[in-house]
Length: 164
Image 1: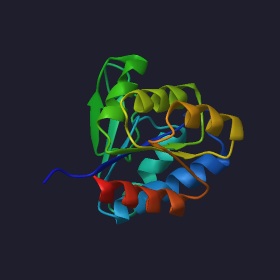
Image 2: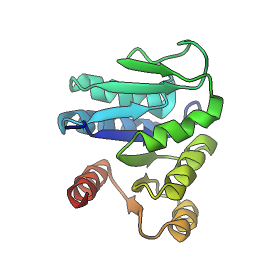
Image 3: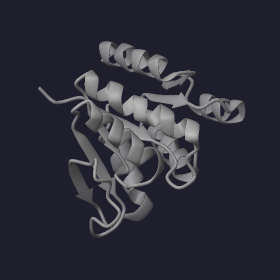
């Protein structure tokens, strides 16, 4: 049986303290659920702390890296996939995940959400910006879920997976 991969997307250098706190907890709960965590793999922001959270709970982590070598990879990434694709790797992040969770927001995160919407991928927004919520809700009312907490995000993942 294919393993469940949950993608956590979020800002790198621009991640807020709240984004990082949420990402760490997401990684931890994803690992506790027995799922595999997929991130952008770098050692900054949401990618770094989500991977650290998963590792704290003995989870398996995958990082999809933008460059042509493992420079800047998080030490908490078990499997580093080197793409040499730059931001085009965002499509790999999205299509390889059963569910995408956007934790916070940045330009790359917006790109990943847009790609998820285009691919009809279930996407969860853990973001309290109402303009962001309204924009993406308008694009994908049937596959976009807006949550207010990490726990609600995990409950929503379980409900999505149960439907599929």
